[in-house]
Amino acid sequence: MYRFSEFVIQQTRSVTDARINAGEPFDPD
Image (cartoon, rainbow, N blue to C red; front, side, top):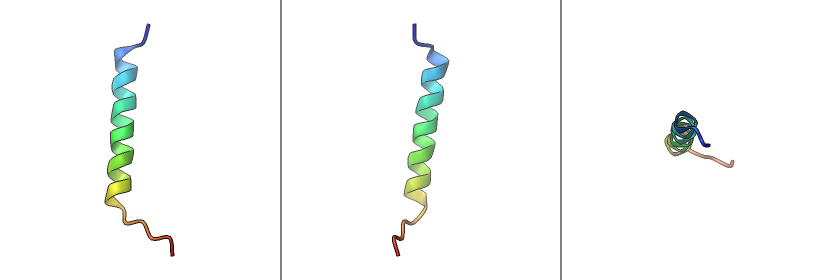
């Protein structure tokens, strides 16, 4: 069975990564 705590951890991690990617300006140059 899938643990709810594990689900929360994954959701929080994905949201944090998305926030970091959105917050930091991406400059390929």
